Length: 365
Image (tube, rainbow, N blue to C red; front, side, top):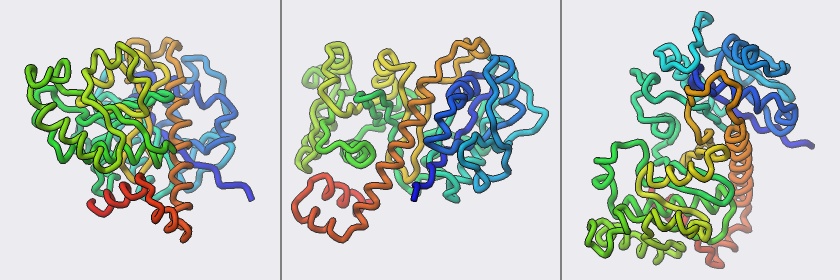
């Protein structure tokens, strides 16, 4: 009996950016519907506008009222916006922000009902989407609040074997030092380790931790956070059996190629990790929200207003986000199946560190 296809919910993001362009280019490949069932939360009218303007070949799709009606072997789309919505390419408009919010809200409601398996979000404008329903710095924080079931989300940027996680995400730089403490850092490292093991199938992953200050503090000469917080947290996780190393100065770590020796890199703040990542992996990178019960991915790029409508945006990051979401969902499903096997207890008793670590963390939650 053939396995049921994985259903992927796709929010259209900002309609004035490149979201629909990369979405249409990716889904125009007929092989996509062979590996999953796409469900677009957006607007048939807006999609048709972008397709015609970009001269992208037409493909078959079904307009449905609910994700429960999604048909295999074709693209499905749920209308989430008013029919009189206006596309203004390259512009940040309140209407586009509202359209992005309505799609995200509807998709979140359906994911709560488990009507699809993987959430893939196209880029939003973090300013125009702000409203009474969305008072968050970005997708990650919204999904943590809405679908996290009390769990804390971690943003991870991924390209092949390069995986960069963040201790702090969309927060002002001035607030970063006060948001880093030993207990939270230990939990972040434990959660990152579990993600690498259970979502990506890595056994005994090597994790590099970056310093907060230039030169990782130079032994306390340029800041005390490394000595007082980061190094003690690294030692505590090493005592738990996690292969944690550092703290490393961020500039030399990436510039020397040292990053290639690790399975995961934990950066202290947004630009410390994402600036080098996007320099190396912009067109192929994926934003993955780890630590939550749901599987959510997104392209690593933004709305790219400056090239909207020019038919030059690459769909590669979108495709990689799609593939990663499917792979993680399969990995979690396999792990759940293995755990349900009573023979698993024998595996626990043999002292698998990652299993023990995972169970301990769940017990502490």
